[in-house]
Image: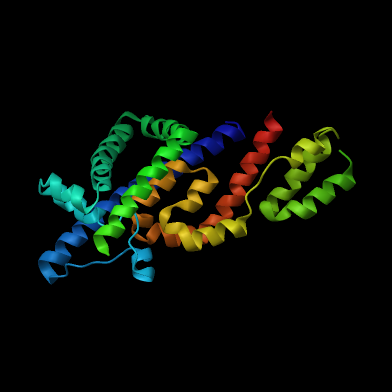
Length: 146
Length: 113
């Protein structure tokens, strides 16, 4: 194995480790919110650095509640909390399934898709569109919380 | 390339790389011919300290990742409010090493052309 492919293999393994850890963390967080609400009656878990430090919400504030609303089937409430919640929920469904598929079939389709997405997202028009979307959502969040 | 030029370059640009990579860079630069001197200066590296400052202030928004070119990860960081804050904190500690790694990759890509 040349140095080049060894480095690429290491990168791939780090990627899959990272993604698996992220999935565990994501679902763990949802479970935590569920039990915090039902066992301890804690309803307001504030985790955003920006909101805790400055009082202004960040673009993804409310996405946890949005995902919870989607789990209960309430799409409108989900969008009202944070439209990004739908994206996050979709990722949380697809990611574990794809991870499982890659693990069973010993392929790395997810990593290849990630690299392709990275190149796509690097394009100028895409970046500008994303920035506009994020700023708009951020503005809406600020409007909702202030 | 002239050893004096190489050492001058390394003195001003050592902060962009990990200490153990400097030997390799010096070797490769000595093997290059002098005509590459100007084009090497055109290669833009990211200052690890600057990126750390960005990470400390805007890490939750994924800006540090976007600057380094990890757009996909940056989006993920932004969507999850800095990975529920945990990723934000982890990046505070790892982003400088990561920046140097990215700089090294850029240098190697420059060599490869």
